[in-house]
Length: 455
Image: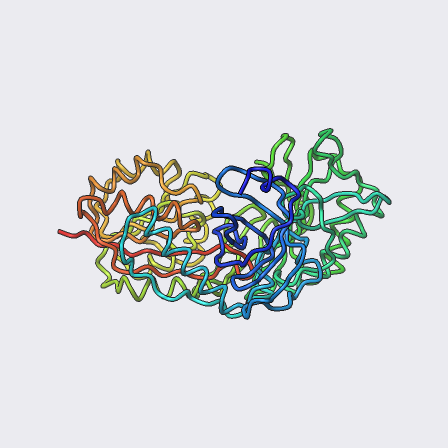
């Protein structure tokens, strides 16, 4: 084939054979890989090329010639536009297969593990209505209407929503009504190009077990006329709403939350029950978005570790103690390490309200704290952000050689990279890898890997 046949805008016909780790369908044409969103392995499609490189291309679906047996009708009317979900058009059973394959491929191709012991994906109780937190960018339509929603795929064009099928349905009335109230108040919506306006995001949280809700407006500055009266009104109108907060983010940034939060009415947290414990969750607290699946994965971790009550546990990247505290109940001593001082403060308070006294939380970067601990861990729990562990953390673990390590990951590629380093030269051995579906209808997969010292 000549290069001219690979020009942007060209129509090609191909069969989708795989899914990428970003959720796109993958096919081959003229010995090159083509990535096509909104497709499923088994689809025969006509694709318009939108981006062409020497070894691969991206394209958009223009015609479905033959449907895959794994293709289903999306639950959301804007699923083909909204960037919030990538896989509403794929059957849930096949989503689980694809996620397991994603983990296997990462461990084989990046980690170099020939036959990694990857279990079937821990399925979610339901693929819809699960999100306990939703944060929506705000915008204004051409006709001047306040909009809230997710950005269209590969763009900054907002798809306006009045409800979302993957968020907890109890949040839907808040989403629709608060948009109307913002409109009536005349509050100026933030414009990121001009860095003007005030309101940036609308954030909603709910305790799945308690039903308590938090509403947070992310603003460029605190000057929002009438917000106190509006906050009081929202609390009266929605009995389960326990707090209304403002979070200030004055920066030109893609980050949603800034460093400062004020409670305008009610209280600045909601209560949630997790693994038999009570937690206080604030507007910007990290808490797993699918409460029930996170709890089920914790049960597997407890079962696999089979604590005897005399172990010393170190939980790195511990956040507010979501995993630390339930595990601390089964060990002799636990230590949690977390870089954010606010999260450490919450973790200590959560330990106090649950009468858990054998745990110590320390504020600071894991790579700086871990080498100087005064305890010798029997088990180290790693739960880093998507970028994975700092290389020095891996080096410290190889020096300390804790008998067991549990690695909880939200990105298979960085999990595979870090496990390769830990298991090099036969120091550690992977005993089990358990993927879990924390994000149904998307390509994201959570994974926990259990490794043991080999000698």
